Image 1 (spheres, rainbow, N blue to C red):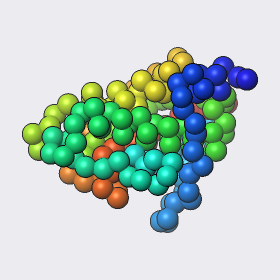
Image 2 (spheres, rainbow, N blue to C red):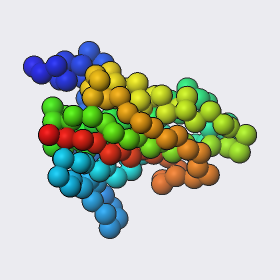
Image 3 (tube, helix red, strand yellow):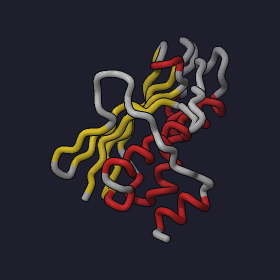
Length: 152
């Protein structure tokens, strides 16, 4: 068992088999040693969307959990694209948080994703990050994230 597989196991994470995109885009694109991942929403393996708006009908804790789910989906896409063992560094993570006008703590929500990436990938999971509010996200999701990744 690889170190990453062991970290997934001890973190209680099972990577889901994700569906193909329903629209006119690809889930990832690779150029040289750079992998670009399309947005991953807070969709559970059963297909349920963790949705809502922080400050209106979802708490920060709800949103952090949704960010973790989106990060698991991100890891599943990386595994599909190149294999997690080929990640050299998560270069940039962008996190959109479905937020009420009065909510301004998107970085706390984004930590739900960032912490998981570091827990699973170690130093290769540390990244630059932008956390942004959004009035709405696809399918009513609470969180969406995308990433740029250096790969072997």
